[in-house]
Length: 311
Image 1 (tube, helix red, strand yellow):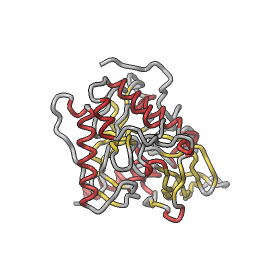
Image 2: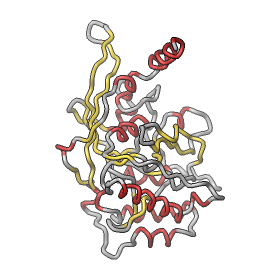
Image 3: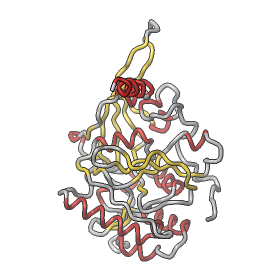
Image 4: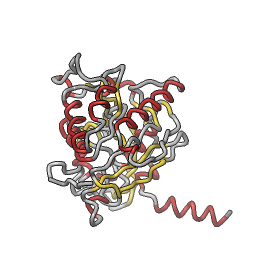
C-alpha cells in the first residue's frame, strides 16, 4: 500500500501544473448564447438537403470528394440551428511563475471560451448527421468561422462542463465500413437515441458522443507525422477517455467515431481578450489552454499546403 501511495504521489508531481491545479470547468449559463458571426449571412435554404439525403449523396464518393461536399454544405449554412450559436465555458487554472521578487507562485487565471455545444453536422434541426471530417477540411471550416480546433486539455474542460453523459457506442470494424457515410448515419442515430433515453437534447453539452480531432505539438515535432491527424477523447460516464491522444492516422482518414468541435478564437483570460491561437503559440501562456510540454509553432493544421496522401 505504501508503495502504491508513493507511486501515485510521484505521478501527481510529474503532471503539468495546469492539469494538476485546474478547477472543474462549468457552463456560464448567465452568458447565454453568442451567434456564430459567419452564419449571419449564410442561412440554411429551405430546399437544402436533409442529413439523410446528404448521406445518400456522398455514400459512394471517395474521401476527398466527400470532404468537399461536407465543407460546401456547412459553408452554405446547411447545419442545425443549435450549431450556429456558441455557449460559454469557464474554468480556473493555476500557472507556476515568479513574482517581482523572483519567488515561485501558483497564479490563478480564469479562462472563458465560447464553444459549439455539439459536433459539426449537416442537415436540418429535424434531420441532421454529425459529419466526421479529416483535419484539413476541419481546419478550413474553423478558419472561415474564426474558430480553433481544441487541444486535449480543452477537450477535457469541455467534457467537465457536460450537462449529461451517455456511454460510448462503438461499432465493430468490418472491412472499411466504419469509414463509410452510412455508418456515420447509423452512429448518429444511436447517439440521438441514447441522448433521448437520458432526457437530453441536441444543443446541450453531452459527454460520450465522439472522439475529437485535436491540435497537438507532436504533429510538428515528431518526424514523419506532419501529414497526420490527431484524435483524442470519447469520454466514458466516469470521465476517462476511451481514446488517448493518437497520431498514427494519415490526414486522409476519418471514421464514424470522429467529430469536429470548434472554439471561437477570441477567448478571455482574467477578463482580457486574447486570440486562442496566439495563446497556444505563446511560451509564457500556452499552459493555460494546453497540457503539452511546449508551445505550438503553428496552432492549426495547414490546409493550404498540398498535403494529400492517396490511399
